[in-house]
Length: 131
Image (cartoon, helix red, strand yellow):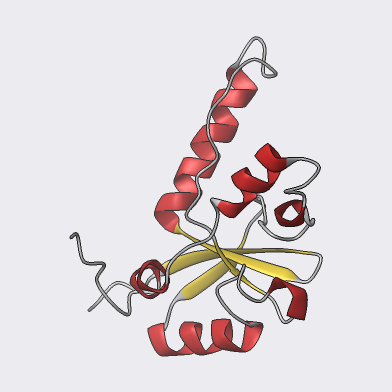
């Protein structure tokens, strides 16, 4: 029997984010490192960037991977098992639009964009080419 793809979902301000089991493990490991640190404010561990986002908010078109309708279709097509979890939801607080006043913060948010190939691969619908 083929193993089902396991994904995790979190939403904030009309944006739904999806991560793979592997990315969720990285998020949890980062959180654990921060908890164990004697000085969490000085312990820098980058946040995993492979987070797929979906929203029907028109001003986010081009930032997110698609609409919630596309997300539902991807889940249906892949047969993925989806569980709720708590993690950072990119593009849900407007940081992507701060390029004039806070360019570093905006650029960090922009790094969360994922490609169509990464999206399909994470839903188990296509292998990502390594070229």
